[in-house]
Amino acid sequence: MRVRVKHLDRGLGCAARTRIALRSIAIETTIAIFIAMKDNATVKTFDDLEIHRPELARGYLQLLNAQPHRPIALFAPRRVGKTFFLENDLSPAAHAEGFITVYADLWLHKTAPLDAINHALEEALDELTVPTTTVGKIAKTPVRKVGGLGASLEFGDEPKPRQLPAQPELRLDSLVGRLATAAGRRVLLMLDEIQALSALPNGDSIVATLRAVLQKRKKQVSAVFTGSSQEELAALVAAAGGPMYQFAQLLDFPVLDDEYLRLLANHFARVHRGKHLDIADLGRVFEKIGYKPALLKDLVKSMSAEGVTDVDFALQRMMKDDRQVAGWRGLLAGFQPLDREVLLRVVQGNAPLGQDTLRALRNIANLKPTIARVRKALDNLKRAGILAKPGGSYIVEDRLFAEYLSTITDSAVPDPIPKSAGNRVLAEFRQKSREKK
Image (tube, rainbow, N blue to C red):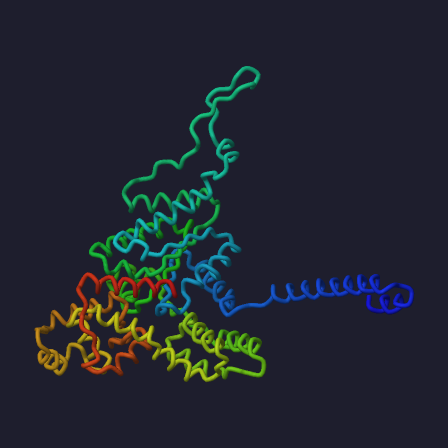
């Protein structure tokens, strides 16, 4: 375009040459904008980075197909990516192999988990059998009367799902059968946080119902369970005499490996030309934070915001952030006094039920510790998702919170807050843990 303008210079006036030059600039600018828009459309942010594991999903499906009568129970701590894997890797792979997948989070209704499972099955069944459009509803509505020569039609009621048993146990059995029949495919039932059943007074009865339905419908349904409490999940499916003993196969769910670290490091290098993150350092910090991918991503995002490459420095700064410390202090203040003191003894490496611990607790005013009360405190902390007991010893599940607890002194321990407010703090902590799984 510029060459043409140059050749026309001699024969055109100043105004004409100006118009041609401006038009040339406009065209070049437009082209540059389109190129930039195309480039920007392919640019990813840290939040767009994901690791998919289709091979792992196919491996689990092969195992299910080889033993269709036997569910798989996957264990991993909270927030290492179990739910993401179920929804984004296992579910698509199962669809490709002819399953219809149903996901249910048993924490959705912890006091009535069968209702949560039935709700998920009913939603899947409605998607198959209940039309959502007016045309679809008319097409499935029975005709009561046809006028002369078909000139008029009188429709009956719109189609509705058939009545299901009201009792949750019978409803579960009926729903699984109807869904498999309506879909013409096997159902893959994915139950998240199944160890929640063990905390219920009637948990054994619910598990017995679940086992009976899966056994009865084994040609129509397969199941994958997940759990974030190794002790409770093992008691449910692996302990002799447990309600699912020798029924479900307990497997460790693998954490993300160096592929995830390289993904974060490569994106950081694209954003910051000439700067690189050390994979070994990332791996060491990833282990320290309990292999939680969302937490590591947040850490690298904070580093990217300032162009920092020292991951250890960034982690220490995050741990000392006023908002982080305030959250931990609020969580600690939400515990009852004995629960809090027992937690601090666990962090110090003391046996919570040992005589030395009991003597130390008796020296604290107003606690009045007994073996029974300390056991109850431990149970409270486990239900709150603070303590875990892998291998027979209690540990604080959140390693960063444990490190914070190890640095505080008795004088720095916040005063307990009222019980109702404390319950709210713990509920918020559990909800945040679920959101970042």
